[in-house]
Length: 156
Image (cartoon, helix red, strand yellow):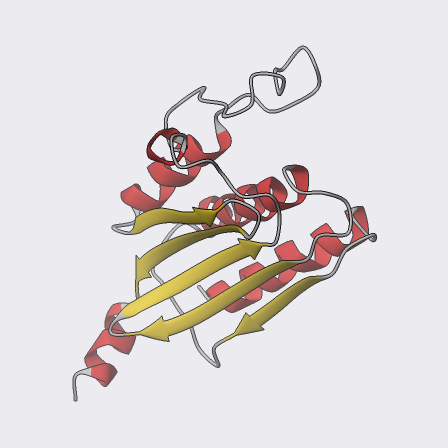
């Protein structure tokens, strides 16, 4: 499946729902992976949704899809407040919320989104990581192995 096309659908949907901010996509000409298309799209929806939900209105979100060294890399970057360093090691834990006021009863998150992302990415042989700086924003980066045919082309 083409990850750029999946990301395009997610970005288009997010633009409709959150017309108050710029959500951009920059994609490689080709970024194909073997995998479960609905699950990979769920990863992208969770990442873009988190970037929108946990930043101020009007904060831009940038999605980048690239293919390099036999990997397809997706980065979702926001220009929000960032995540405090003490919370970064825990963001992929089930039910973890850096801000306790974001409870399900208060209409916030359940703390499952990034745990689901990590589980899906890992099941596809990929990796996930996060970088964040207070006052500068957050980038979540996932990698998937490129399709076998694409990896063979890169090694020739």
